[in-house]
Image (cartoon, rainbow, N blue to C red; front, top):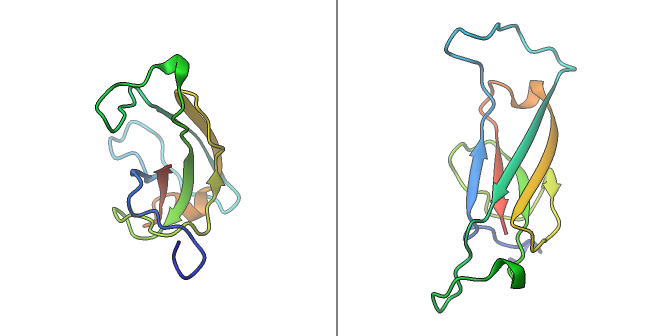
Length: 121
């Protein structure tokens, strides 16, 4: 626990998503309107969980819970370090797959230097 009352996320696996215009020229492009939204599904599956002693965990006896949280980040490629301002905090689940449905403001995330960090916990 940090002095600020938030948890440190520096050791959690993190991935980022950047929404940007199609550079191939195959898709029509138009300016983003202020009221438009980006709709995005994010799916992550854990294929194999290894215990500290090197043995694999049996899926049917799973005790390893997984959650995926989504944070805005203006520093592309850098980790989110503190558990603050989450857009989504998913529930912890022993399931093998986590799926999140996101609706975001296109004006805030499309073609701008702001990304979403996906933080596994």
